[in-house]
Length: 360
Image 1 (cartoon, helix red, strand yellow):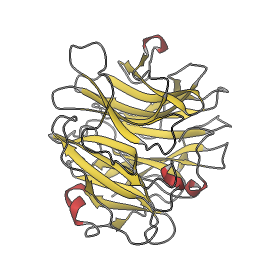
Image 2 (spheres, helix red, strand yellow; image 1 turned 45 degrees about the horizontal axis):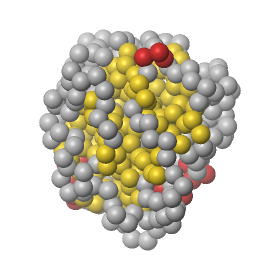
Image 3 (tube, helix red, strand yellow; image 1 turned 120 degrees about the vertical axis):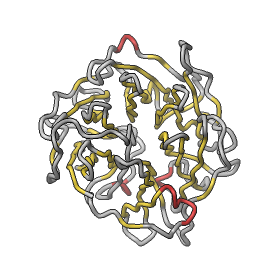
């Protein structure tokens, strides 16, 4: 969420599970991760902490990035653990006087860490930014790259992944400012191997609706292809969590630029709200879609095997392992069957990041 702005009361006290799906074939070589109760991660921060992103690195280390107001300004922070109990001191990633939100972490096959986020330099005017780190904790603000630059667009909530040929891809939501009846659309920009800069952003080919909003994308490389899941809703509200009804949509691509036709996942009657879709993988590469829904009344987290996305609601289950807060993220630890869940919890203006390990 965008810090102090665009926070929806629907989020208070609800659950969201999501994931990164990094290197699902990795076998455990380090400490054994064991289930825990809920624990505070953003210690020493009396102000707002939101937007967690979690990945398991190639060596089994778990990394969590999020934004925090702890320094008097919204910035991105990162911490890590190798054993599930000892965490590194939060490292400040950004130092801009503008607000930095919604980090998305990725590690490539060579071990380099990549981070995408959006920076708000004016109300409802955001741009996508990018940086790299050799170890996931040391980030040079002087090496930041502004990926999108158009002054008349609001670009936000990025998600980063990588195609099989090594091309980095950032998907994000964009809408033209000061235009009546504008629709939010999903855009993509690519950084190709041996090319210094990023391609000019373009709408994701063939996937955006001409009459509805497309929002909250989550992308992951699911084996030999890239899967994108997102939210679609009508134009009665510009922001998805304010709308009375929304559905999930997904598509797949071999290169992240050319896509199969968008397929609707949810088909609930009435005003069911389906929000915050995400993808995560087990260690043996079994992928799932998880999201928040009011299909049964109060907001709950539902989970569906990615392979059964076209069979909804067959295979649908309620996820009861994480039951507090919002913006949950999930990733498999190196220990088979044990996962980390990270989420936001607390009163508006003083939210914190919590985590727990759980067995499944």
